[in-house]
Image (cartoon, rainbow, N blue to C red; front, side, top):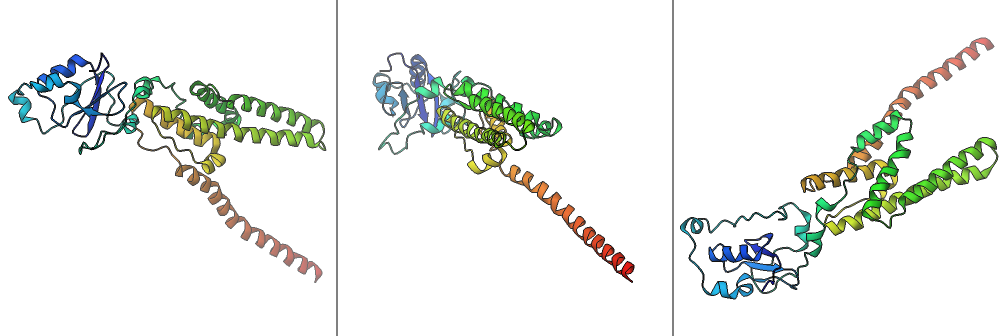
Length: 301
């Protein structure tokens, strides 16, 4: 017996719920469930046939009304406030048991009931392209400020995150290093402090990526953050991931996937521009050298 626990139903390859016990009993009485319908509630190690959970109801089934009988081939539709939608990733944690009935998948929906996407703090959703544009317009200042906004959100989902601390320490190293370098050009300490800034910068971003992948897994949202792409595009690549997470939080859909190839295309743009400039400048320089050589020869004559 459920003992007051809400019940999940698996029928026709679809899982829905949780539902109150009295609702399930009423639907059993209406004949809305087939013999292969499975059920689960908190505290149970695996799915079981619904008839074994309510044996007294199954012993005296009520013939289904004609309307429902005509639609018996279609899966029943249930409405519940906290029913997971068909695109929610936490459905993947407990797939519906196989129809063979030989074995049932173990189920633990405690996390899916307590950690839905509605509980996730809203990530900064600014498009990575705008972050890139604002960084250019502010001569790089926006690139220094925006990582703190990203790290602040990561701190909300992972209280153990040290990304903000590392960013602050790195920025302090950069400022002190620039001051020392301005006062003494020959001092190597300024260069070492500037190097420390970049090291802390990268460590903080890889720390944020680790926190995001680990904590979003608790919401059953698999996050894939490539280390190479993160190394080259740090702020912009991570922002693409955060915008994707924000869309998932609003819609429940994880498609389309976060951008990745676009960043490598972006890298090709300056390479293409430099190649075009070189193609124009090198012949012009060769002509200039040739003309100068011709002038020298004329003067020698």
